[in-house]
Length: 215
Image 1 (cartoon, rainbow, N blue to C red):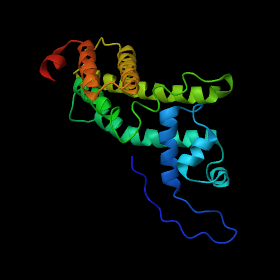
Image 2 (image 1 turned 60 degrees about the vertical axis):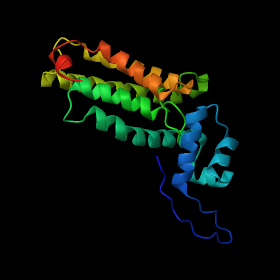
Image 3 (image 1 turned 45 degrees about the vertical axis):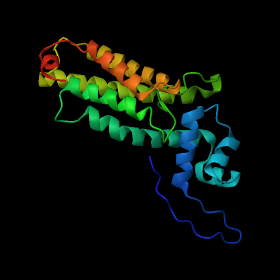
């Protein structure tokens, strides 16, 4: 994700410093992605964002509000490749999932952002006061799983997935695989290893005509 560069005007007397808000948000997103919500201090944030404390509060309100905005920015970015592959009209369901896992292996190991996924592991260990953060991240994970289930149901309707397939359970399985790939990536696993895990995972796809005829 490359933030749009906005040219700021010169600072006038008595006026707050002008900064590139989208770039500052991008830097905050990367920091939260790398360290998590509670592992990122306020000083870490303003240092990475290159802004003063007053500019931070004037522009983003609070650390929690910034985290929510950074999470939305991540979802907008990741959703572009996730949904484009999952809902590609020219592929059957099994092919879509195979391509999705392959893309996941690639995206989780790119060198231009932290490894893994900002959503997969976030909010799983929070203090009691951060329950709202935990619930928000859980909802995000549930949304992607429900999108997988919807794609499997479409496969049943299209005739390329066996009619007796448990869509919810199969989606939960591949969601769990994707989260496992995120853990592997965070632990330093190579793209090749993640790709091989993805291929093994595809062996769990329900056998049927579509599996024999497709990738």
